Length: 421
Image (cartoon, rainbow, N blue to C red; front, top):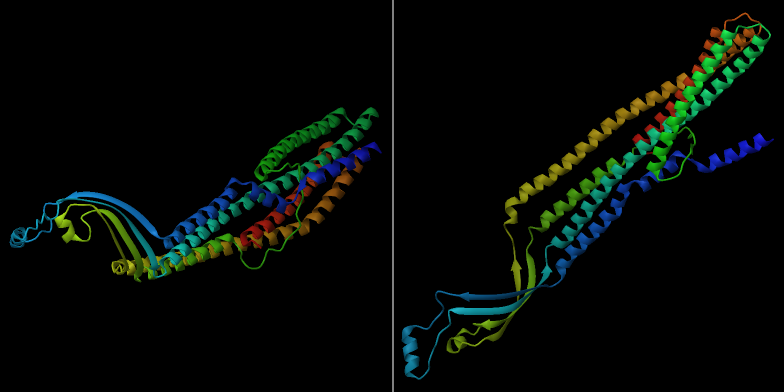
């Protein structure tokens, strides 16, 4: 009764700590350090777009300059002489000139350049996010490898324990037979040695399991001591891999860049205001008569058209088109290789299904042979070596069945990974 209670408590403890494959994959993605880049990329994109949007704000600049000129505007000598005869002294402009001012410019129409630049920034952020999704998706494959490795070790430990129990039962029977003089002690020693050899294998299996369980727990960032065998899945259907979404985002980026190139060909319209304090001012005639600093200002509108963009427009569009063609080629290459992977995985699943269909029959036959050998041993008409061989043969058949089942499940979930269905 105490043993039953202990077994129930142990089972509840293991079940509480058990993690499914989906839970491990989700935990691994959350725990993987690369996940932090999602927020970093989003914040960087938002800051970039915000900075581009500030292109609509008035642009204010302050200037201060001092110059000395080799020549300045001056009255003709005849005019200067005539003014002097009239009692008017015309000093002319000074060759040293000074200015401290402000320049304010406001964009009114930019041909859609700012809007296009914001869209390009957003699409660049989307490409980075999509690439990050691709990198994070590979984490699932690493989880699959460790998870199914643990399942295989669990089954091998279970079968090893069964093998030890069978050898222990034969050992117990031989011990009784040796006491009654119906079996040789060397036969008992042979079975005992085989049981100890299997126990050594158990030590190795348990050590491998502890290491792999610790690795998976660290990778997922959770405490684990038990995994659950997943159900068989059908992963046939469409392809939802993040690599395809990455290619789609690259194509959208190319479209945004194409619109930015078109906006670069349009003229810009803006208004401006300039003001400065210095010498000379706008009234140069007055400043020729007296060298005093003055306040000066100007407002106006300016239309600019950078026709230099036409020089590189054709080549820039060709580069964007090459980006599109490269992305489409990457799609074709990925889908081609992906289809090959699906073919191999589907074939492997079919192969393991066929092998598993024969495993039960093989195990049943091996079990009958082993039981017959144990019966013959009781009557002293079979060698112990033959019995041990039959016990190992049955265990090997069970191990093969376990390997076939785990490998088939792994191929199913590898196919699920390949198609992301």
